[in-house]
Image 1 (cartoon, rainbow, N blue to C red):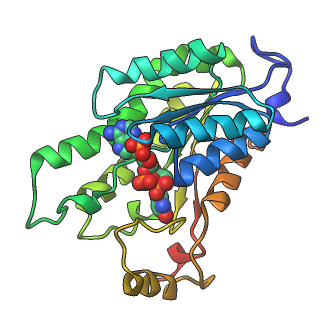
Image 2: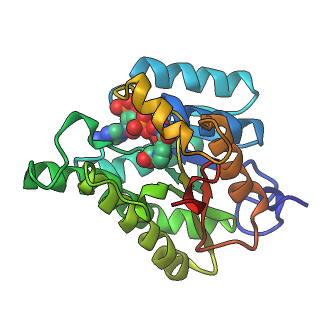
Length: 258
Ligand SMILES: NC(=O)c1ccc[n+]([C@@H]2O[C@H](COP(=O)([O-])OP(=O)(O)OC[C@H]3O[C@@H](n4cnc5c(N)ncnc54)[C@H](OP(=O)(O)O)[C@@H]3O)[C@@H](O)[C@H]2O)c1
């Protein structure tokens, strides 16, 4: 019996309800749709991409699942409880939290030479503090679920840092550590795991030579896809009933070469 059908908790027999942050586009969109295909109802969170989030919610509904659209800027602490409350109020419960939303530092200089404390603090708030805060605000709901589960979108750059992206890499290293701490803090009621993509989909700012150079270092000789990341998230949510505190790479083998 798949873990989303376990006969425990208050939601016995009901579909899992998942909140996916940053789900209007790219990897978040793929996760929302994959979870819907796996039988979950999905709250699609966005910050700026309203039209895209509404379209994803419609796609979830077309797959026969319930959906909701939830807005919030994760750099604003006031949004943290509001995002959880909106998702739970719209769909009646909350079993799964996917911390996918993230700021990538391609739009500001993130090298040591260009160090800027305000940019660092904002990025860490979005990428590290907000996932912890959403877990805090969702804790009662996730524990009550009996099938509670969190997946944090990390990055292989946590262990293979880039000097041009100091704050981003530090935020993801922190998220890897947070994943393990939260797995202990929320056990045995809620499982907490992480997924570390290598290249799922390039940042729009990367030019072709940069993309080619990065792909040339991949043992599997290609970039990945949002769908391949989403499949791993789905596994951890639906089938990984005895897995917690793990961060799994989906990176074409990049993390095993120098
Ligand atoms: N793409 C990759 O190859 C790759 C590689 C390694 C790790 N990852 C990780 O995998 C996850 C998904 O990757 P991605 O490339 O799809 O991410 P992304 O496009 O960089 O960002 C995903 C979403 O995060 C949301 N977001 C950004 N700032 C926000 C804020 N202040 N408040 C609320 N939401 C905010 C945005 O939502 P709106 O558009 O609605 O504003 C954005 O669409 C991220 O955690 C990323 O770090 C991705």
